Image (cartoon, rainbow, N blue to C red; front, top):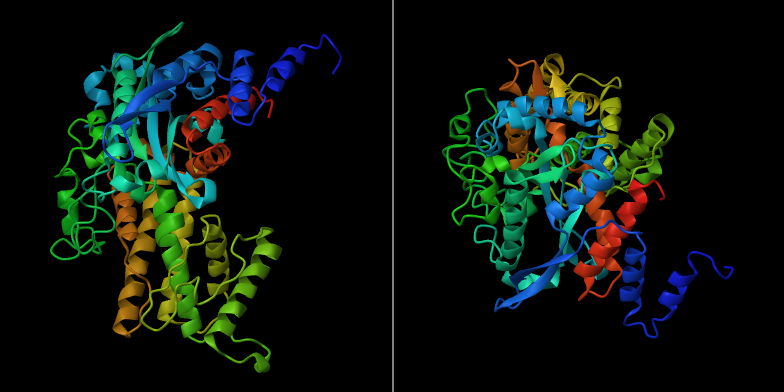
Length: 535
């Protein structure tokens, strides 16, 4: 670098860090002062200390301050990539459609019909990422539902993060909550409520950030919303949206007149009021988003595929052509994976994340073991496509084969319809096709489970996530009389998982005592580069 270069003084300043203790501080301060980071001041809030006695200061990026910076220089990020006039019309269409799903939402109590065009629909997201040495990092973020693009950096904005050591000692179960996490989410709720009620003054008028749901996987939602009824409670009441259980109100009932449907929204899912209930009218469970990514790709979809593979092997499929290899179950599982791998490479032109199948990773260790897997979500559509191709080959007719094929077709059609439709709005035709596909999947899946049970076989587990998918079906069916239907894919958290992964990579680099602060500082730098197209 030649003398007089505009970056010379910055390098000199960075070189003044004489020890490793202050190099991170000098770097972040110098880069921020020279305008290479978003102009959002880091604030500090009081949270319960890890030991449970007293409070400590914790860094955050205030919601309203972040929104002001976005409106100052990157307003399209909150206006769905549109002009202000076009965004007004889009917001009005969103709220008309959303009222069909959640007419009790607090947004409609706070804001009049005329003001809804200034109301930006937003969501909160809470999830645990992977920090240093594979320890958990709680990542809290927020973002617009109507995003300006598909990238995770356009959909989720950092609010704060917290290392697992800061709150793990005070875990006392979902129902009772966690005092450290509750103190953090209380401030989260306070800021979200202020953004909802007072808004953000801009040159185009005052815009309001209206938070309509909290996203996250099922454990994260149960933790921050103090869910007494959650997926771990079977056979007791296990659904945050209704009173279904494993006894009097069976969650496995998928008929049109299922008794649990009369209990939807009747009671709140908590006993100890959670802080995030302040963003709702009465603390209703509808504030918990129904996430297709976790209930299908990482849920009932994986369960169905694992059972289908193991059931086919149990029926005698995938016998090796080489008789010297034998016909043992491990050999046939290996043969099934080879068939799957050939299909993905030569037909789909893709590479699966999972590198082998075995009795262990299919959780099929014996005749009394219910098949399941913990593969990546990206493997679910690949395995489904392969299974449909395999079941379509010329086999001798069989009730199980027919039901598995119909079940797979229903699931594939449903996910394809939702993915190809507009991210938020479905047409009436698309919604009818989606409901029909879900009807096909759910009915044939339950039939498979019943037939297997009648034959004394342990396959096709009826899990809570099958019930949660039935709630999605019920929501869509309830809107079919309208012209525009809310797409359940709007709250799918595939890109949220990407955001959490990227934010957690930042959280792994600094010392863990300074991790929340350094993550916020580096996120401001990283996001500015991405929003300006410099990275």
